Amino acid sequence: MADNVFSILSGVISLFALGISILSLLLNNRNFRLASYSMRGNYSVSFRTENWREKLFYFPSFTIKIFNSISSEVLRFKYKIQIKPVTGGVSRIQLFDGIENRNYIGINRTGPVIKNKIRWKKSYPKGYAYESLHGFNSTPFYSYFSVSCRGNDERGYDDRALNRYHQYIEITDFTGNTEIWYFSFSLYLSNLEIDYDSKNGWKKLSKSYFKYYKISEIVVFSPKDLLKNLKAAFISKKNLAEIRGEEEKCQSSERLATEGFLSFDGDLQLYELREYLQFHKMIKKHI
Image 1 (cartoon, rainbow, N blue to C red):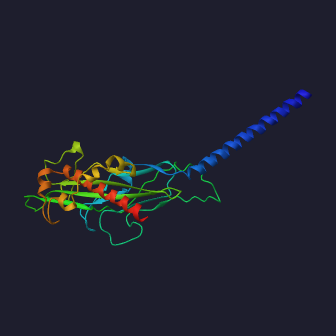
Image 2: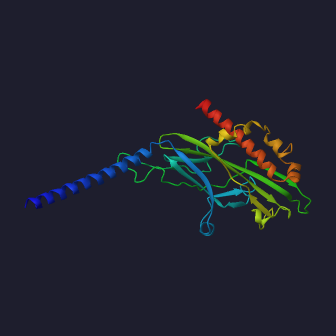
Image 3: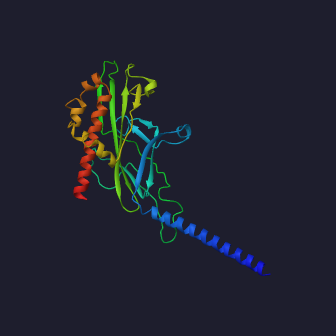
């Protein structure tokens, strides 16, 4: 009889201990989840190519204007931006223009604001802050820089053109810390057979002003990248007119005709780096 009572008592104690362990585990998980929302955000920002389903059945996340006109045709930007917290979380993400002159204030007109609503008092988040992946859908991108060179085509079309696109990314965590990233890329356009190389990323355009196009490598730049690029920010002082290789926007660029596309990308990346550095100086000075 005593042995049975002892066995029953041992079983009850074991079940009680198991219950305490499970409850402790659940509480610890909840506390760890809550703590993750109070950590400073650290992010990974990247682009990936659309898969075949997205190309066939979904609207693109981004499109790009060939000309800076409402009536201009647009090209599908076949990449998707992905922003994932490594630590901390994302409370708000916003794309905004920062290089070209603007005559408005307020939130950006071409990018969405993503905000995760966490009701701390009524409910607890079911996942960790970093267990999220954010993307965008936006109205078409307009270039901040364009250059072209005239050709001898009977139609009077340009031989080549290069457009440069740039967007800042504001990422804010749940503790109010904000980081400013940016991404940029170029669109190469050509009517010259010598430029077209399908193995090197060039594609054909149908019923367009240009016959061929290519999107350059995408630059993704974070505040941490300033350290290794600080020296490069002071190497070149070229303004956009000097980079273009012309005195007026309406003129043809001899530089594009003779040097091609790649030399422009290098100069424009340095220009964007200087603008980014100046932007950070303004933030520290005025905010």
